[in-house]
Image 1 (cartoon, rainbow, N blue to C red):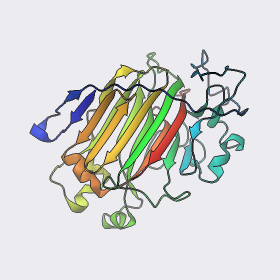
Image 2 (tube, rainbow, N blue to C red):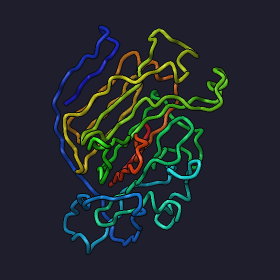
Image 3 (tube, rainbow, N blue to C red):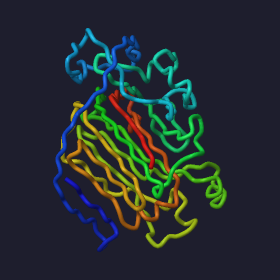
Image 4 (tube, rainbow, N blue to C red):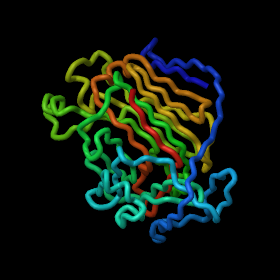
Length: 316
């Protein structure tokens, strides 16, 4: 089902629903044992084991599998240090890296890469912690990124493995995918900022067992030039939650960015399409993809474990 979104036209959200079903779960497997430890027990207290993804023709506990993820163009931020980041090529050795092992490790029984996090160290522009990948088109560098005009696509198969609840018994939420904006050095200097931070145009949440999507809108649609650049020029939209309940089972998300257009697809069934004045004016920014586990709570004792079975990024 496609929900076509033009928040500018007629001053209201407009939805056009089209049904298209293609369901094709997949999982790449490779035989190799990886004895990565569980996160420290003081931080994780799951009541039961998370669901496993079946691998055709293989027996769980006898055969071992690795995730289908190339980390050569990703760095990871951890909830420790100031915070701590691990970049290529060091990230490629995550299975034996003592710093990464508590937060990023293989579950070789179902071929997943686990991202574990809890409230801890934060980056400059947020109060929440994460174990999250950041795209690096040039490994080890943040300075080469992409625009919507150039385009980008990210597709991942993932699952919520375990997550804490708040004092009311409601699951905490976590961001599992993003497209984040970035100022060029020239743009940064034009508006007198001390860093290259720009808003995230896309945030995708695991929220109460469903997938929720939020994008950015201009506060003033008549803004032009340098008026578009400050974080304060943009605000969150109302957000849309996909119909399907994913729970703790594996699901597939695809994100496609192109000139003046953004599309998010869940399980090849339902699609959210964003286009109109906000997406058109977003073209002023460079962007990069993010994926992993960005826990949106500071509650004491909170935690989350997100599993990725596959993750791929491409640019035309």
